[in-house]
Length: 166
Image 1 (tube, rainbow, N blue to C red):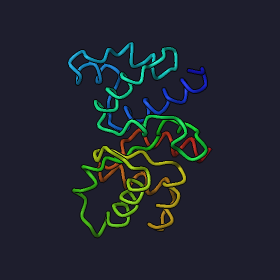
Image 2: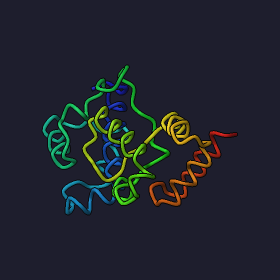
Image 3: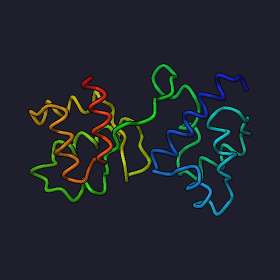
């Protein structure tokens, strides 16, 4: 396995793990020690080759098709950067429809396009936040505060938006 391919595969593994809200130690705990944090971390960094059998087992553990873990299944084959903005979909479901309707529809569209397998959280990009700000007729920073007040975004999202504004 080439080093670049291993790094791309690792980035996909990390994206699925973080999408499911798991830390490396969380994977070890959830798998009852079947998946050691240090081993999964080395797969994610591309430091260790993963066999087809182990990759299939990891896909099963994460509840995703194996092809979702393979490099080249995102546009251009590039691995996504780590998410900075994470929507809590469970909290979003509790926000009144008249407030959250546009966000719920937007999130459902993203989930469908990405083939998201989680249902608990959804990472969005800065461009998504800007688009939502237009929909809500607010600035991205004002919308961020609104989403934080609804409990849909973590307060750490302020840093990502402040970084974007600078």
